[in-house]
Length: 410
Image (cartoon, rainbow, N blue to C red; front, side, top):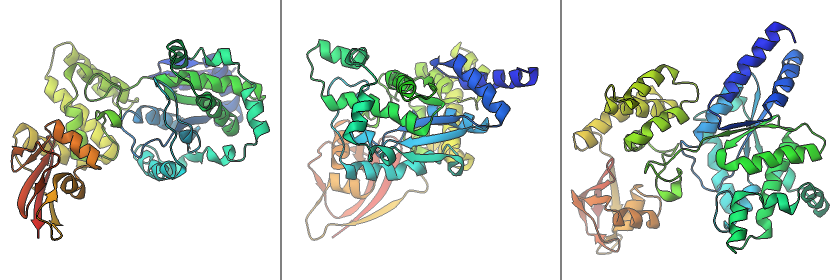
């Protein structure tokens, strides 16, 4: 290998390794990369996500940022929407069977993903695929061939399966199919590299085994750390109420990042940086060592997150909003107004009010927020999820940052 090619391979591998928890098949990839660069052929980089819920969160941007780095290196990023695998349900990290989603639920969720991913990636330069393209054409014989590539003993090496089997918790046959299908996606896409969270290690490595069984070179696998939620304890998840959504308003996004416990702030910076915030790294480290202003550093982190997803102007506005509403405990100057009608009734249920004012997405979310003490009406905490409001004007507040002026007519 000539010195210039060697130097470029070394540079790209260093970029690829950045932020990884584990890098499987690095030496194989190094040889493949040298060959592709000499032939002016890009690598194919796979990142799959199942549309198991309609909203992505900033934890997902960790691998999206890495996909962006591959794009900058001149390779082909493939964003795979698992519309078939979502109907099986990924058993990763689950202590019990995950209920499969209906085809309609999957389709509705999938429709939102491309727009959300476009917040991070230049979507025009990304290959968008759906695994139902090939899995819908699978015949029973195709499944038999696929399932013959790996033994049951190998499947039971998987940590979550092993724990459930040892505890006598049922494992259903369709759950075993999930890693097979995810692995076959790599065959169908001829992936050279697959990215994923560290909780996906088993599934990602299955891709290497199945590719070999189908006569392909085994993909390299790069796993990345999982982002802890804003509670500082559990993995970020919308179902746990500790997530910062990609589709959150800039004000919500900023405020949620500011609520991250101080001892987790540096993990957020390190994990989310994605090679773009290197100039801040020394300042954050000094802050972690007790120097500097921790609150100022947290503002910088929140500003970085909102700027990345919503733009610099939105980040400036969100910072001003946070200071007025949270730090100065004021009501926003540009308070949105909502008009609702009682429709002839004496009162309108508070859960319906919150949902209609777009302060919550569902009655169950509204009930949970009320039980958590996060809802107030005219400055007074609302405690009864079964209660209602009569005609009049009200100031509604949910959490620390969301306000609505409500006009409730007859």
